[in-house]
Amino acid sequence: MNLSKMKTILFRIFSFLCVFFIVSIISVIIINFIIMPAIENRGEERILLDVTGLSWEEAASLLKREGFIPMKGKMRPAWNKNPFTVLSQRPNAGSQVKMKRRVYLDLSTTGAKIPFPNLIGHTLRSSRITLENQRMIIDTVYYRYSSKPRNVVFWQSVPPEEKVFPGTKVKLKVSLGLDVWEVPNVVDMSKRDAINEIKRTGLEVGKVTEVVCNDLLENTVLSQSISPGTELYSRKRINLVVSKFSSNSIGN
Image: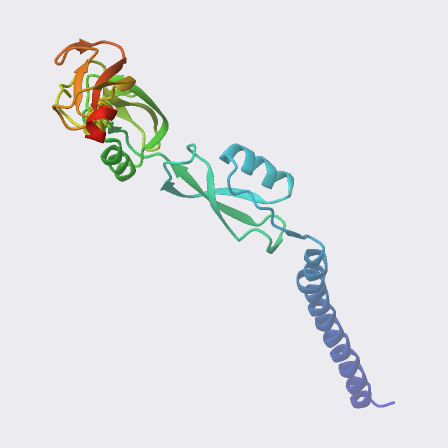
């Protein structure tokens, strides 16, 4: 075998070995960094749990146990939530997510305190509107007699101008009317008008007695059991005496 032919064979062998070596390295790289991670990651995906409504501590602990990385997202005012309550999450709950993925949680903040409004002397309706505008909540309404007119707030559990967070609950006392009743003068009124007047002042009608009196229209009030102008500190019944025609006068 001559020298030139030997060199040709050796060159071909060397070229083959170089190509084989390069192909082997590329194959190892593809297998280790592309194929194997794809196979491994396919088994590391999980459905992301819904952690909205939980506190930051509860949500972070749960996500860590599931293999995710909890991250604090935006802070947003939410007056009806406790501070650091999870409002939303990214990615969304229920989506298929790879483990060790970062999950961003938007959290609630109450914001700054504001002065509580003065409701005393205002009607219940206007008080509701005021509280809604300032994002406050009526807890309970009590109805009591007071020195204020009917349907007017005369007491509130949160003092006016006290600094509170939005969402604060308040109890209100609303007046049923005055706690002192002045007896009206219903003498010479018709029976019907007298009853309406007594009820209008918050008092009650008691016994109605009829007596013969042909000089006045029938059912005219002749007298009342409690004198007009009397101040009462408890609700009492007022008895009335009204006129009626005698049977003889009707026949005549």
